[in-house]
Length: 318
Image (cartoon, rainbow, N blue to C red):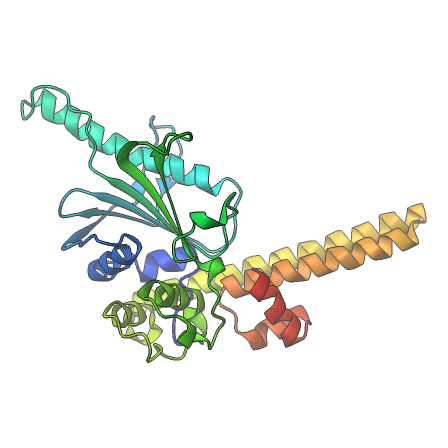
C-alpha cells in the first residue's frame, strides 16, 4: 500500500481532507488560490443540501466552508474530466445563495432586520481538477494553472457583482512530472504537484517548505489516520478497483461482439482497424482510471499489458 491516500478520488478527498481538525489545512489551501486573503478561522458545514422541493434530489458537495467573516466556499475535487462540469459548479453555487437569502428572510420575519437586504457575502466555488480545461484564450490562465471567472460584461469586462466567483486549479496543466518537484518554484505549483502525485510519493519533497505542506501530507498519510478513516479510504479504493474491472470486462465484451458482427458482414479490414483503434482507446482510458484510483505504475503495466513507456505517455497526455 502507498504511504499516502489518493486524494484525487473525490470520495477519498472528502474522508481525508474534509474532516474535523483539518480546518487550518483547508484555510491555507484556499489562501494559496485566493492571493491576498487571510482566513483566520474556517468552519466546515454539512455538505448535504436539499433541492428547492422536498422531493428534489439531494446534492452532496465535497466541502462547504464558512470563514469568520461570513464568506462561503464550496470546494470540489474532480479526478476525471466530466461533461458540463462548469454548469454543475454553477448549480452548486445556487445553494449558498439560497441559504443566505433564506437567513435574511428569517431575520426580517423575526424582527432582527427591517427591510429585505439582497446583498450577498462573497461565495467562492473552488475546484481542484485533474485535467486541463479547454479555454478560448491561453492568457486566461494565471501562473499557467489557475482560471478564474465572475459575472461580468462580455463586451467591456465590467463586473456586475463580486459576490460570486469560480476558481479552478487545473492540475492537468502542471508541467512537472513525477520526480521533477524542483521545477515547482511557487507554493501554488508545489500544491498542484503534491495533490497530483500524492499517492505515488514516499515523503513530502524537501523543497516544499511552506507550512501548508506538513498539514497536507500529515492528513493524507495512512499511518496517521484512525482505524475508522483507514477502513473508509481502503473501501473507497476497493470500490474504485471494482469499477475499473467491470469497465474492462464490458469493453472486452463489446470488442468481442463487434468482432462477431464485423465478420458476419465481411468487413475484415475495416474491422481490424476499428478494433485496433478501439482497443488502444480503451487501454488508454483504463490507464487513466487506474491512475485516478491510485494504482502504482507496476500495477498499471501488469493490468493493461502495456509497456511502462506507453503508460507514462498516456498519463503525460492526460
